[in-house]
Structure formats: C-alpha cells, structure tokens
Image (cartoon, one colour):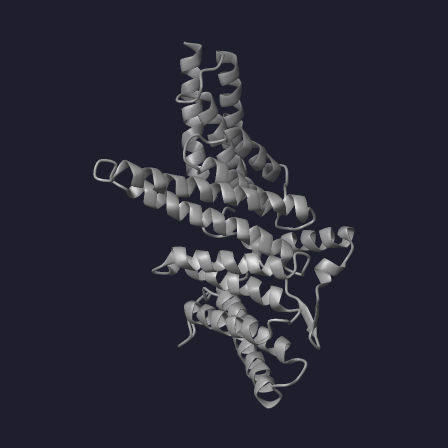
Length: 362
C-alpha cells in the first residue's frame, strides 16, 4: 500500500525501549546486525499480515488505551511519593510515553473513546516530555524524551491551525535528540524524522509561494518565498541522505530514500530529477518496502519529465528509452498494486507515455 504525504507509513512505527532502573536498552539496537535485520524482517511481515476484523481491533484498542492509562497512574504516583528516586526521570519519561502511545493508537477501529482524543493525548505528551527534559536535563533518557516530543509535534502538525509551528517544534526536538546522543536507541529514527520534518516544512513553504499572486506580489517577496522552499528542500536532502550513511542497518533507510527522492522531485525548478531517480530506485530495489509502489510511480514521473519538454532536448532514441522505462514503472504500479493511491495516476501516465512514444515515431 502507499501512504499520503505528511505520513510515514507503518515502517516508521517507533521501536519500544526496555527500561530498568533508569537504564535504557533496546533489543533491536543491542543485537548484532544480522539479528537486527531479522527483527526488521519479522516486523515487516507483521505489518503485511491481514488486518483483524473491526470488532477484534476495537477490543485491542480499548485494552491498550486502558493499560497505558493504568501504567501512567502508577508512574505519576512514583514521582509524587518518591520525588528523589533514581527512577524519577525514567517514570516521568514513561509517563509522557504513555500519552504519546495512547495518541498513536488512534483512530479507533470502530468506536472512539468518550473524552480524550488523539490531539489531547499528544498535547499531554508534549507537556509531560517538556517537563521531563527541563527537570532531568542530565538524564540518559533525554535523547528519547526529545525524540518522542518531536514525534508528538509531528503528529499534531497536519490537523493544527499552525502546522508550520508544530513542524518547527518537531524539527528542533529531533535535532536536540541527536545532539544529546547520536548513537542512542532512537537515533536513526530521529535522523529520519529530522529530514522528513524539513521536507514537510518545505512543502508548506512551497504551497505558500505558489499561492502568491505573481501580479500583486512584489518580485522580491516572490523570490524570497521561492528561495525559502528551495532552501528547505535542500535541508531535507542533506538530513535524509544521512540515514543510509550513518545508520545503514536502520529500518528507516527506505523511508529516507523515498523522501530523499521526493525532496528533489517536489522542489521548485530546476529540479535534479536524476538524483530523484537514483533515490527512488534504491526504494524500488527493496522488495519489502511499503514505499515501493510510490517510488515506482514517482520514478516513472521523473523519467517522463526528463524525456519531454521543457526538459533539455535529447536525441529521439534517448527520449524513447526514458519513456519506455517510465511506462514500465507505471505498468508495475497498476499490475502489482492496483489498490495503491497512485494506481489511477499510473494508469493515466502509462497512457501518456504511449501517446508520447507515438509522437516520437511520427
């Protein structure tokens, strides 16, 4: 399946740390590379498993929401009864995690709970994690608190009245997480989300620029708005490229490569479509990636744009090859993932490719 812009798909689900007495470890991060790849493989298999029936899913949702609530009560109690406990930082952090994970459970499969909403849980997570970071600035859990603080802001952004402010807060949190510990349990996650947040900020800037009236807006203001989008897409590419370089075994490499391609494809002209093709190809070559249909579609779009005006003129044979390659990409989307969100677009562009190929032969 494919995932709309602004979301990250199931392979982005955060790994859960195991906390004992203020010391945090991770089963995934602590295992050797071969074992970690096996863990990621099992995780992807679970993601591909059939969705349970709505009634069963609702039972699981209600149970998880209740358990997070019960855990949070006990964690808060520890902080109140034993404020000087060496576990106080851990309890405060996990109290914030309970709110974040409760918000991440939404939407409810059938019946939403009465009272708390996804937004209220995520906002509470921000308050709790901010407080933890302020009170326990020297804790070894600060990098994780920063990361989930950022994840909460990132989730809040699409439905917020001020999405840019939420994304800016998320970006600062992910950067703070990496500054606290660039090799921590969630370091690869933070690096990916830092790049992805820059991408979302770039999309906001690009939409703002495109919405300006070119007649009524001063040329300097138009140029500044465009440049902000250009600069943010460039920052996204820099940060997303680091995932494969610094965290080659991360399960976020395919996510990062997909948005690395999108950060070139979606940028204002002139776009580096060859770089976008390379990034999308890395995703296409990962057969287990949930981003593969999206990457195939966008690689096809890049190849089509490279072959046709206003692209630089090229020999007909080269244009024909690009159009045939694009056609092959679109056909794979239609035949392999006919229910993906880009399937209809792929069908349209496969027709356009055939049309352009006929023009080249005329």
